[in-house]
Image (cartoon, rainbow, N blue to C red):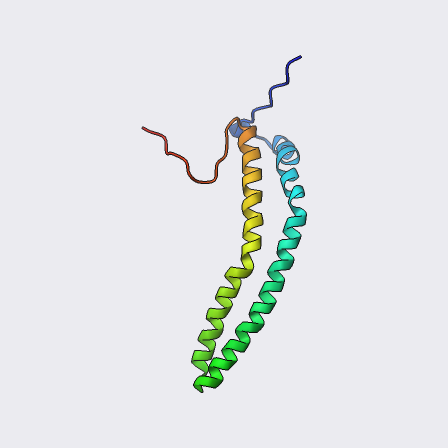
Length: 125
């Protein structure tokens, strides 16, 4: 007994019902599988943002008090907030990248193709 060939999707002929079927069968399982990681990443983001925001406020106040001018304090606060945002966002970015690879791979497989994040050779013309 041979294994059944997976159905190949033609995106040019994809109607609403077919899209809903593809979503339920291929995309939604990727989101469900990563939900606990997403929740943990959001919690980590909030924790890092809160701690970093408090440290940014303290740094801004210290620079303002040290310089005697509000402008350096605000600049220090903004730079610290910017770097806090970058650091706090990393867990969310990691989950997003994992999810992207999974659902794009599932869609590509459904179309009879493969998905690779970066590192591909452009076609020769």
